[in-house]
Length: 390
Image (cartoon, rainbow, N blue to C red):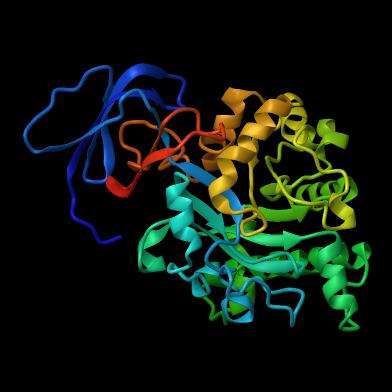
């Protein structure tokens, strides 16, 4: 975002850094869009803009680890929906940044809910959907809002790909075909990578393939596969293929993760669980429950939560965390699931997810615990700028 830089002091707040320290009455100093100082007392100067939190909870901005905000716009139907390119089951070359509309009204809702950054991108119609982006939730140009791009490569298992393409009379019409297409695609991408590396090492000419180039960050383990998988067998298939090709992966949705928590934990792949605060709309989510995050976490898996916006409006992510906390995840892990855990899983914990000196000044101030239904968002701050004030 293009913005006027200010020196901002937040005082008299319960500061939950999500980095192991909580100040019951703390202060945060922000300068040039970054956190400059955190402590129990910071000296005020005339050039500071002051926010008196008056005992409110001061936290890292909330992070949505998997959604479709901006690319599936609200209340616009076909004209605002660029989520799924349902003409080819394998489209790794698609980039979310080319379809996201920063003027989607849902971004305003996100900011009012204390959500300061999101991982957003293509849907699950295709076996390979394309590249996700991690971005801030306030701005006029996507180019100014990007934190990491590409941030992940979307792949999908289960009902959606086979439903879309069986109706077109082409693969995949079964779960077997989905897995086979993905294996074939990854094999060809690995061969392309090897061929390119050999040619460049010898100083030979090499013609780049735009579609294959999209796989290089995945194969180089710079970004993960973002695996849409609800049912336990689909989760295990995702894990099997991820390990077969020795790739990073996140298990997105993981709706039946509570049936196989030991296998999820053994994979070392993190889980982004949800959307749970919605109806059981299809067969593969018949067993979803808010107990899943707690069970999967206690088995040893790093857990974040998702609204899958617009399935659940993104501003209610903190309330989903509250329900997960109530059903076994606990308050501390519930807050981590929408802050530092989400940032870690999305590969951006060096910039967001906790309140630490040097990190982006993405801060949300609430009247109390944001997981509770009567709590209000008082301020939302992104890159040191107040973007929402109650």
